[in-house]
Amino acid sequence: MATITRVTPPPTPAQLDALAARVGAILRERGWWLATAESSTGGLIGQAITSAPGASAYYVGGVICYSNRAKELQLDVPAELLRTNGAVSAEVAVAMAEGVRRRFGAEVGVAVTGIAGPDGATPDKPLGLHYVAADAPSGSPAVERHVFGYDRAGNRAAAALGALRLALDRVSVAPR
Image (cartoon, rainbow, N blue to C red; front, side, top):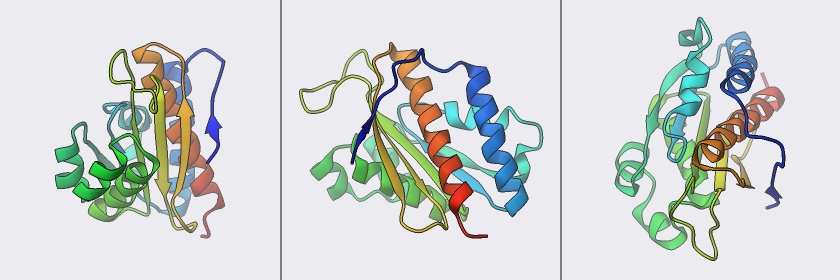
């Protein structure tokens, strides 16, 4: 899995809202529902999605699953997966996306987990590391690894943008 990095400034709320609106337009056109599972972003994705009038036509809801316990209880992420790979991993991001999609009965599940900072980094998992995943009818779930070099707010906003970009990609290529 390639690591995606961005050197531009972190996204603004307006950029997040605009991308969320593009995702929403495709979801509405297809009659699909979206559900979100957010850890490090703490609800930024859901906030961007619901900033668009009429989002209730395609956004079923989301879970802010900050702790491992919440990931297990709310999204059915296996405890063994969390112990083996850690909460900040591609495997957990995929399990979160699959879990939120299944739990909410949505066609699309989007998830993010990461280390926003300023604490929590390790030699193997640097500050700004985030995994975003999307599960949609377009086949196997997709996951991306990002490493952002911003402050806490910038890392969270960039991770939300990454998740929305992946969602846009998945709903754009999914069969109708």
